[in-house]
Image (cartoon, rainbow, N blue to C red; front, side, top):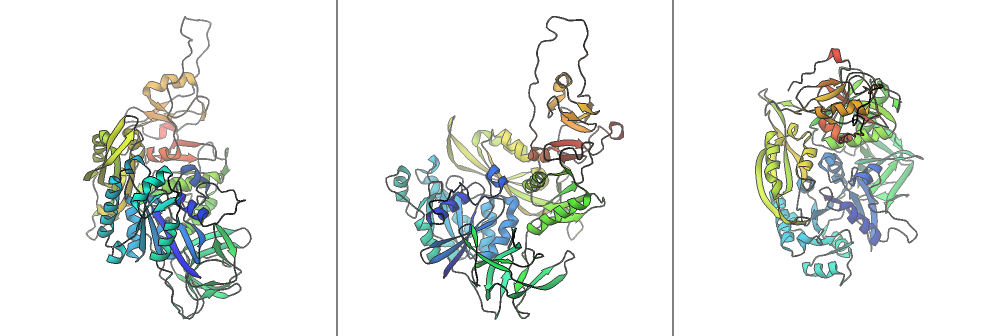
Amino acid sequence: MDLRNICIIAHVDHGKTTLVDHMLKQAGTFSSRDVVEDRVMDSMDLERERGITIQAKNAAIQYKSTRINIVDTPGHADFGGEVERILGMVDGAVLLVDGAEGPLPQTRFVLHKALSQGKKVVLVINKVDRPECVDGIRVAEVVNQTFDLFIDLGASEEQADFPILYACARDGWCTPDWTDVPRLISGEIQGSLQPLFDVIVERLAPPQTQDLGGLQMMTANLGWSDFVGRLAIGKVLSGSLQPNDRIQRRGQNQQGQEIKETFTITKLFSYSGLRQIETQRIEAGDIAVVAGCEDIQIGDTLAGEDAIPTLPRIEIDPPTLAMVFSVNTSPFSGREGEAVQSRKLRERLLKEVLHNVAIRFEETDQPDQFRILGRGELQFAILIEQMRREGLEFMVGRPAVLFKKDESGQKTEPLERATLDVPESYASEVTRMFQERKGILVSYVPSGTQSGPEGTQNRIRLEFDIPTRGLLGMRTKFLTATRGEGIFSSRFVEYVPWKGEMLHRSWGALVSDRDGTTMEYALLNLEDRGVLFTPPGVPVYEGMIIGEFNKENDLNVNACREKKLTNVRAAGSDAHVTLRGLRQMTLERCIEWIDDDEWIEVTPQNIRLRKKVLQANMRSIIRRG
């Protein structure tokens, strides 16, 4: 059978998963009786809630005589590890770029990985029905920007000669001819994704295989079946697979030592649409799902003979942030979820590391605390939310940047290139915010116009080189400063000399000085001291943070004080008064807000902020650095 293995790569929210939806539907993957949801590839609850792809997933379609294996990859830079390991399974890529926003940092990151591995790319300009794209001027600019990006990333002449399609993934059509776009938008003619299927078959190469005299396969992904256990997913590079074959797994243990074990394939699956279909044979070039080994890990080589060489393990860019996970030691431990012992917390984190090659696990000096190394705040937030939904209770600390020493012993830190797309009226305020965090403006260019409630306004694209420390807690401030109209993304560049001290948070915390239940009377008297996080009627304990103080130091307060009843009444003194407003502290906001001497207490029902030292007389209220 003729084969194509492709991945869909793009920046977050440029329409990858929507495009895959229509590819599956138009290829006849679903029968008329199937109930198909939107964004069918986003199978995780968190993916559907947040509207982003978190884990890479496989599907397969049949177009005429060609079988096309499709891998949908994440678009957020924090999940770049998913992209890096998936590229080894595919032989070509469909690059999706928003016709108004153009190529953004994750586009550059993924495209660089694909081009460096020699993949050929099909460019699809999506969302050409947006008002900014109708005249075609902005779309032509985006095509030129993308071509410049190819050249900047060192694309070969063959790679730079990429086919271009103009698409509206939401409506399920594309065309290679821009003159057809107005008629497709108006509905004068009906379109489909057939031009994309034709280009994939004609311009992208079939799988590159070799005959080594036996099986060779790289494990690029893992799955799970309640019936057969752990599943290894990857592309067969040489030989073939059949059930009951005896094959070798070559991997590494936790100490990095090479191990080799032999196992029998109990079940063998291939993809048909979104389903895994049991099969009796898979040939070289196809993507296989293998059951039979419970210890298999991402990066392991499956081989049929001793003479078959072991493949290099998947190389992932190093993590730049670390977060400490701890057993819950608050007075409310065990009330709202499963009180996790250190052994169980350690097992859960190690299980995550097996499935996600972009994060690493480290022990600490404390037996009940463990360090997880990763790429970004969103990656940590997703892991925390998954564990929370499993019914676990635990605490996490503030993300810490991973520093290094260079050859001369000088301290270095990670530098990121932040790309901001903002309305022109907010550009000066955003520039000030980033420069306060030691950001250096490296680019200031117009990025088109946008129609909004206030009329047509120009948009500006800013690029800053800024330390990773400066980006911690910046996302919420950026969205607030741009009234939600800004687009913010970043990518890791390199390690540079340390930029000096940087204040993380300008304000202190309002800290409860006793156990009890918050009272509206007490909170009304605290409103002028800052911003409250906790509403009335909520149980609190000594050391729990209930708000943000409007001065630099912390303030211990009594949030449980009741109004004493007397027989004296005065006109107007008992008028109904309500709190001005509370700040809703989501998990992401908590991660951005906390400082080094604070914990986030995570339970299935609540997310609380607390001091590491609970007793008021045991900690200082003066904040340093």
